[in-house]
Every structure is written in C-alpha cells, then in structure tokens.
Length: 189
Image 1 (cartoon, rainbow, N blue to C red):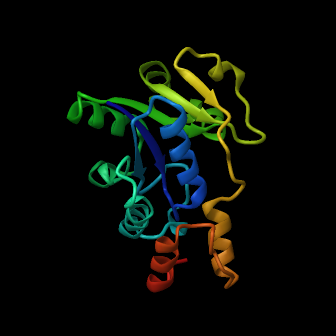
Image 2: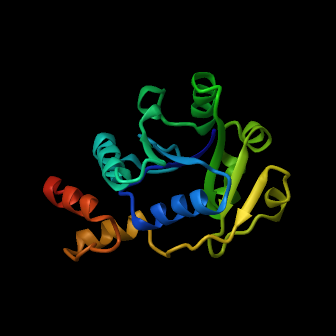
C-alpha cells in the first residue's frame, strides 16, 4: 500500500494541510495519508508548541471523518528531537508491506540538505512535493524520485492562526470546526 507521510508540528493543523492531503489522495497514487505529528522538530523553537498530545488530538479530530487519513504518534516514542530519517527506519521496519512516500512543500525541499540523513532520504524514498511560492530548488527537483505537483495551496500557516488567536480574533474557516472547538475549550495558544 502506498502511504503518504505528511510530517509536521501541526501547531495547529489547518485546512491548508487537509487540502494538500486530499489532493495527494485524489491526484496521485497515494492510497492513504498519515499525519505524523512531530513532538519536537529540530528546526523549531519548543516554547511555541502546544502540548504534543493536544496537537495529536487536534489532528485526530480533523481527520476522523476520512478513513484514508490517519493521525500518527510514532515519533512520541522515539528519541527527541525528531529526525525524519529515524522515523522512516522505524516505519519501514514495522510496516514492510507499505511503500512510504514523503509529502512536503517546496520550502521543505529547499532546506532538505540540512536534514539528518538527507542523502538516504532523497535516494531511498519518493518525495511528493507541492509548490510553495518563493521556493525553488531545481537540483533536487531533477532527482528521479522527486515529483512536483501544482496542488492548490492556501497562503495560511499555523503561525498565522496562533497570531489570530493571540489577537482574540476568529479562526473560523481556517481550521476544522472540531479543531476550533478544541482550541477554545482547552484555551490553547
């Protein structure tokens, strides 16, 4: 089974993430998408992260109505900070029946050379890349296992959503209703 892996902090998950996942399900050979919630991204400041269990719950709430989307907490049991290459090794070992495909934006592709195990990732796995404005890396895009898709991308981010919340403004339509209710109930951000 071809399983797309969409890694992220999902702090919080928003409709942009869901649009990309749905695009991959509808327009590529990906059969399901796993949202891999990263407890600690080595490139992000830990202080701005909501609790990992809250972020996992929000992803579960966002995808619960689609059996082809799944929230995954695999990195919660691995050493921190989370390195994608370690997670990929663990997943391949525990799910030998699956072909894992990394889903990422061209912004992440442009910085991929900074990732631990970069060469193994770029040669050992397929990367399905969605275009992000202002990011282009022709060298990596030319690699055989890198495919670039012109998926619809909303210019919103989790950072923007947190800023909206800090300003006491509504995040309606930026996140699924269930996620908005959870954020409000838990008084996150």
